[in-house]
Image (cartoon, rainbow, N blue to C red; front, side, top):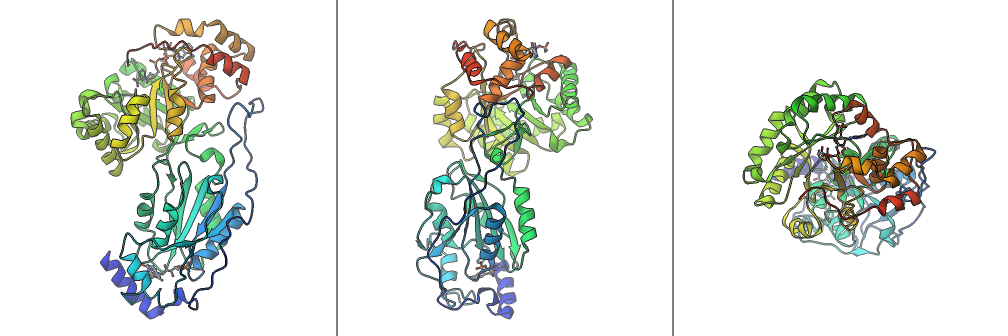
Length: 495
Ligand SMILES: NC(=O)c1ccc[n+]([C@@H]2O[C@H](COP(=O)([O-])OP(=O)(O)OC[C@H]3O[C@@H](n4cnc5c(N)ncnc54)[C@H](OP(=O)(O)O)[C@@H]3O)[C@@H](O)[C@H]2O)c1
Ligand SMILES: Cc1cc2nc3c(=O)[nH]c(=O)nc-3n(C[C@H](O)[C@H](O)[C@H](O)COP(=O)(O)O)c2cc1C
């Protein structure tokens, strides 16, 4: 860090404060929160999908918040607001910065003093009205000594950003966004979706800002946990997209597993669920590698079994080796058990090491989650629990979803030995007949409309294709209510 600052100071001495050339004291207008309204964003649902069943009411409302002393960041913030039709808010210091305050060559200048004190929180004049109305905040600032000015910390600590998406961007003379991105992220609650930030030089064009914004995917479907029925994906709180339907591989032999995964990938399915204890991770990996589908288009989940928890780091490496993949998309702890916190921390370390992209839990219910979550650093991206029409977990699902965690159901068709009764259920087969689809499709579609990801197990290619074909019909509110009324609290396995 010291080296960066030294080089930078030499460079900037030559440029002699060109970057911060506003006259002192900097004149600031009164803070304005709302200058424009976000235009409506369209949704592309199939013709026969009723919008009131899927939550399409939600629209992304974006706020551009920025701090700028010499106008560089301000200009880009204005471009962004124009492009998005977003509201814009200037973070204005209660005590404006004079030119001498901004003198980075003087170690006792105000800016330098603040930057060397992590606890400094310069006060802000005014505030954003109705922050709760915004889903997404684009947060702009200049780089000061490799970091965000401390007033950005004041801003982040002044509001509850839970459930919102924050995208930082900065301008600088030559430094990158560096650790300012992660430092600011650490000030936010776990439920914030923090998108990787971007640094821009002075004079960046509006077209470049447009390109950056296009790549951010700020559509309403891209908020954490909201199912996108067009792309058939959901954004996890880890920042990664996951397909909302796929294949479960429990009890499939190596041969069955390999051909089932191949059938899934051939039919366009991209989500596969396996586990150490299914003894078929190698078959899953082989089918994925030999499919010709690019690795980054496939999403592989596996799980650590409790007997691996004590040596989880080794178990993660073994899993990667068995599957022959460079990274695991999602790893879950299969059940609560001795050393589960320790195993979860090993998964957190594997995320930092790039071995796993997202982590989560399986068979954790309200009580278990309440006890577990305060002990870990990364909020699980997903919880996988038993969910089918006879065991609906209607109390557990919203609890998990409200934490910004995606829910996935196992035994969606009731599990082997129970599928006959469930698929033959009169209510379900009646709804299926009305739509000209199968009972399995009705159950899977019901899950999706409840925001539950499905991974039906199958070794039958016809079933695998059928289970992916869930987007040509939708269940009405009345049909959803009928399905919900089938709950018997009847668990089909012990965990
Ligand atoms: N985390 C956990 O503790 C846990 C526990 C259990 C399961 N899981 C995961 O959840 C996945 C799903 O559970 P599961 O596979 O055990 O049970 P399931 O998906 O509820 O049911 C699988 C059964 O349904 C049949 N089936 C599938 N599609 C069908 C269709 N369209 N029409 C008629 N029958 C159909 C399959 O037979 P065919 O082969 O003939 O299609 C198979 O016998 C597992 O594979 C596993 O990945 C996780
Ligand atoms: C106190 C201070 C420290 C700075 N530190 C850096 C730095 O570490 N690296 C860098 O590239 N630019 C640095 N700069 C330059 C600013 O980041 C750059 O000029 C920025 O674009 C100014 O944005 P603004 O006009 O929106 O205030 C510093 C400027 C000031 C005033």
